Image (cartoon, rainbow, N blue to C red):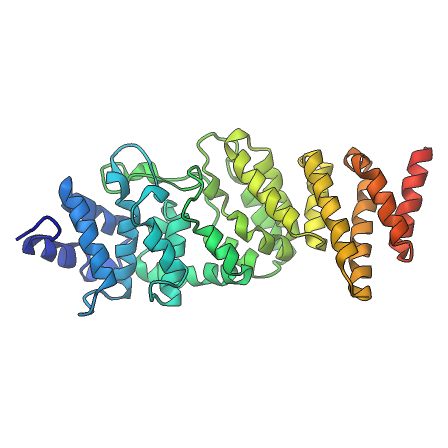
Length: 374
């Protein structure tokens, strides 16, 4: 029976047995979603999604195990907007997106592993390697990614699942409607390599291998999706702190890709500038500036931000350390004959005079004066 909001007994059995039965724990997420979308079509699709959402919320009888819950959340993420083939639709238009985002933020009573898995679904669920995972594997693999996000803090986690995400960032291919091959994405980086680079410094040989993989990606192809770059902008500070050489190569490749990745390049640059007076960030930024990849106004903003940080720091030892870092960074730009610091010449000289007690600042002042006389 159905009253417009419930599934018939036969449909309920199909949902629990055929779609979310024991094999849902080990089948690839894509296959489980395909079974759901092929079983429930037309007006019944909305009813089935509603029933599934209620079951996830009020599963007092424990009908769903942890893997089945992950499969169910994945289904809700791809069953949005009718999932009409062969086009694409955008995740944030899903009526279930707010509830999925709340799970990630700890408002749905989910375990840490479940929150990590749902986060992976929201930000990377369109990638073929994620769709090919079983719920069991996703629960296991997502925890490493989650640990990296937690180190960034609550605000960054909230930003990563904003209820109004960039429409260009999360396009989802149709699943289960006869065109699964269309979901394939070119040149995807190995997830384990991404995770390792965020967790700590890599050996030089591993850094080179990862940089080679990045340069092997077809970023210049217009159909190359931003998420296939492998690194969410929110995680860039972790990559910069742990493996600045890899971060520099990633940014150089993305910045040279073309207009289809211009938005991603801007987000990367915003995160890099926000790091402030940081030696790894300065190493990466110097590489980009010397390659002509950073707009003048961004360079000026970064220098002004760093000068302000030095001036506002009250602890003498910490202040001297910041002044040293900034002075050495600016010296390297002067040696590289970067024209970008010319706009800030007066501010930089005032900085040097104000911190003349620090030998690196005094040396920078002499270098600037020598350059003026050359």
